[in-house]
Image (cartoon, rainbow, N blue to C red; front, side):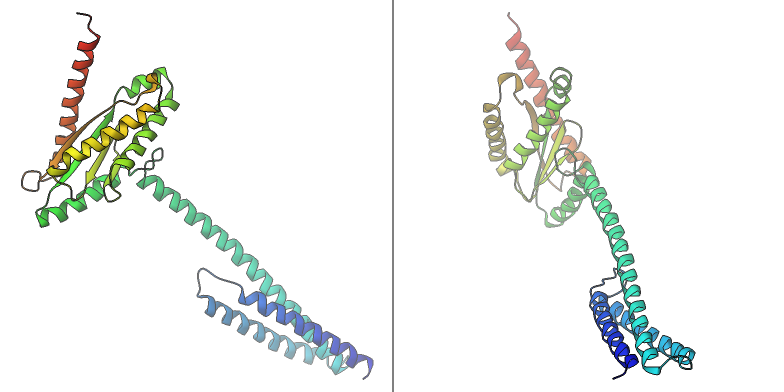
Length: 280
């Protein structure tokens, strides 16, 4: 074997190795915009097309000046390097494109989460609560079933924020949401619908369940306050209303009914507190 043939053999082996690693790298490329199999096939076809065209051009360009063996090996090695560069460039661009897509999807998920859930408590937002409640009301109206709506308000939250700080007020909101989760079922719709107001739509519940629901919530609230110091007691006023499709024809009407009951209980609680604090 002469020197040119020896060099050409080395170049061919090196080019083959480079093409092999190019093929492996190309098969690992995943393009979000094109099916993975189609993308790999296009890449391989482009690589071999490039090799064929380059080989043809270089062979006719240099065959009169250099030994054919040397020209063939050099062309093959140069083509392999070009293909490898093309694959790495494509892989890098694809990777950055995937990172941008992933970042956009994460931002979209965060926006959806912030829109659908209350950021502080993790409960449903008012918008989601009304949407889900509307859907369930349509179902139970067709089935002629009933449901319950639980409405509550944290007492004196404004004064708590002013005297103990907003951090303590936020903590009470979070603790209230935890008490609601502990009291109600996962199938019930629990939401924070205002600053210190929460609502629960009890799917499939009826008037027969009212006493047990109120007892369970009061017990959970009592257990929670037993762990707190007297000056940090959580005080909540609530109301429970029944939804009957024959009498309540809208979300607003049943929510207003539960809200009015809560306000009646709040006024009664204040009257009791005033009498208790009156020395006469």
